[in-house]
Length: 310
Ligand code: NAP
View 1: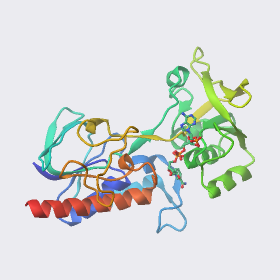
View 2 (view 1 turned 30 degrees about the vertical axis):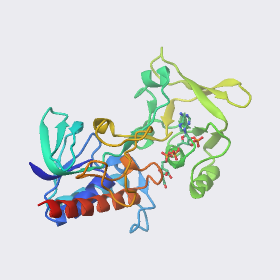
View 3 (view 1 turned 60 degrees about the horizontal axis):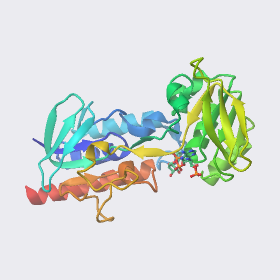
């Protein structure tokens, strides 16, 4: 049996691993499907303290991992598919390879994944012009028009990134005000390639028969009028869904899928010995630095809990 397993290898998981490894808990980190978490799928990170010139997301996450491994954390490239948790442990996890592993203490830091609109055409054209990751796919759209859906920081970040390649970037937002931070709004409005499509929702992605994106049909929610915006790529940036499915029925999880912590000031979940960190429990801040802070907190709480038990 492991002493401590950390499910998730993003900012929260690796920070927990650094602290736990330095406390000689020999943590095992389960990478999940995205080693490095969401930052590994982004470009320049400008608001992580300590990097005045910014740092590339994948680079900083490689460093998180190296730092955790330097102190003895072991990374396993597996995803948790199911969990059987009980007060005080042992906690049992089923992995994607079918293996069952047990631990005394568990830190859940499984993060969140991008949300989709849920349109049939969107799903059929996924990876054929529809994407949720401009960083991954943006360079494929050189000198052609593309569209981004969303009005938050992610949408503007993706739009600004895409403007390096695309001839035009249309940002389709369902309201007439952005949710994004002021600095991102200023950058977006100053970029001549960005065009805001206000008060509009995507009704359909064209053209499923051709198996490629040729445009999107949007409806203006104020006038009820529909029109087609010609584009060759569509990028979704409409928020995230927490990766908590394996823990449903085991941990206290709210209607939106986020894990609830009974004592907001502590990281212990409703199951004694199971600690939680990062975006799987945070729908408010969702920042790399807050996830890292939560990871630190969970490792310290887990260490103290194990110390009392052992
Ligand atoms: P978000 O702030 O929740 O924004 C999601 C956007 O998508 C909102 O504008 C929302 O519209 C829209 N939306 C949601 N569901 C939709 C649907 N079904 N159809 C159409 N539009 C829909 O998510 P986020 O942009 O991913 O950001 C998450 C967190 O990460 C935030 O705290 C953000 O500040 C942070 N973040 C920071 C940076 C940075 O600092 N550089 C970069 C990325 C993310 P409404 O506005 O109408 O609700």
